[in-house]
Image (cartoon, rainbow, N blue to C red; front, top):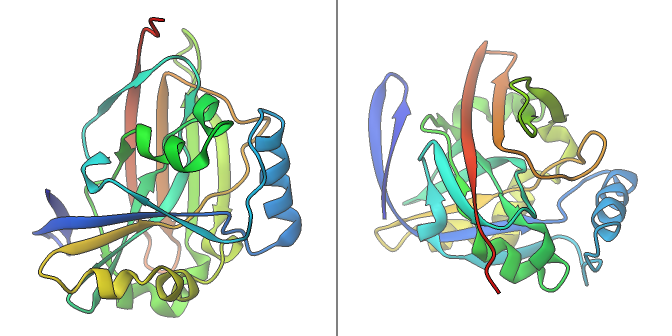
Length: 227
């Protein structure tokens, strides 16, 4: 699947052939337990180990402004996105949109069932490597009929396990050497209030050292659940 990204004022294209979603990647044990607890509150079983690497269909990655989901039980998660191609790494922004009702039955299946929205701008990993953990991520949601964006998540990459460890643990570089690129969503932060669905999701990744930001938003269309 081909995806086009803005990079340093130009456009770069990747043929994505591999996608991984890294889960339970919090560095702070209290923070990761908070995320486990908030998901347990909606029926999700705790992980067998942390972190976990879920293979998902690369076809689920999308840069579209709208995704369609089945039912009312899905929600987004702002995450760093790492892309590997022929030994070169890039950093982007994605949402691990997940079916929370299915997650209570199987986390792996819940990761597979929803599209994964991706921003259309990336940075060279080497350009941010020396201040990577200062990079800030935030998300907002619009709920119900309201047009107001409500703060939903906030944190820095320092709150996530070192991306170098996740890249090593997932085998991402090896997966991105077959002539196609490999992508990995790298984990998230707890939600403000509680994990909940929304009709729109907005996210941003800000580099305070270079003064650059990547943003993306998308609407969620709920298809009816028919028994």
